[in-house]
Length: 113
Length: 118
Image (tube, rainbow over all chains, first blue to last red; front, top):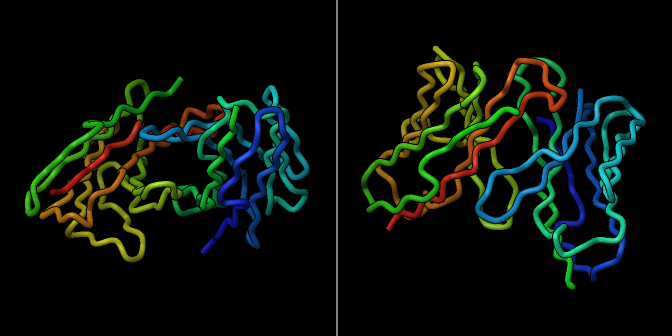
């Protein structure tokens, strides 16, 4: 069974601060995705990282995929209240199993004005 | 982009009754759909993988007879919670995999169904 450890589980910061969320596993994933979910809604895909060492930027969000494709991080610069939400990392299995997503436990981010 | 429609968004039912939740891919065919359960402030827990035209594959610990899944067409999967009890109250989310090779790697989620059993 592939597991993803996501940390921190809860994070409360002030507007303007930077933060990093980590996603680690002992397993190799073919790709890793980051989602953001708001209360009462389904998760919305932010990014997919595929290549080991890959870095992707989405405005103030920077995503990295580890060289060994076992870990990833999400860094938010100058956080804003609109960034508040549940951030989920999800690994895509390498072959078989209908490409099930393995989700981390999530990081509940609160950005206070 | 790919859109997945999930209905109803909220449902309240009496204990002992059954509730059906629908998940439709609106602009693409989804041979595989996934059903998740989510508790407040927690992550998504995969319940089962639904394949069009065949039996669903359930995750360990998920009762097949309680959570009936039917994937009768390439655009529709349904989850029926049978003989619902208060402990089945939760947020249920479906996702569909789009095989058209989109850069997003084809996972699109529905907006979820809040089930409350009273």
